[in-house]
Image (tube, rainbow, N blue to C red; front, side):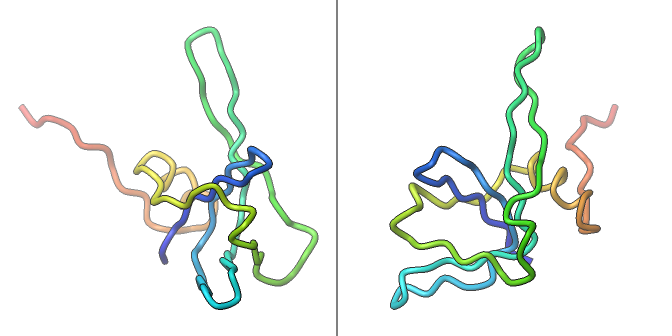
Amino acid sequence: MSLKLVKLISGEEVIGDDVTTDLNAGTVALQNCVAIVLNPTKDGITYGFMPWGSLTKDDKVISLDKIIYTATPNDELKNGYNSMFGGIVTPGKQLIT
């Protein structure tokens, strides 16, 4: 599984399994997509996930001209995503004393 974080020109940030990037067709296909929702709190900003493109059965194919950037998500985001889809959740790094 190769998770990709995709920032769209609409301002949405989507995370999903990278299926294929087709430069000739100018598309990126993702599976198990969720949108990242930022939630401001008195202590800072937290995030959550909401379904994205959940009304379709197929992979979500996004045109490259609708993408600002793609990136590898950080460990916190990966773990949150993996806990939803049954992937491996890695423990945080802690100092052993």
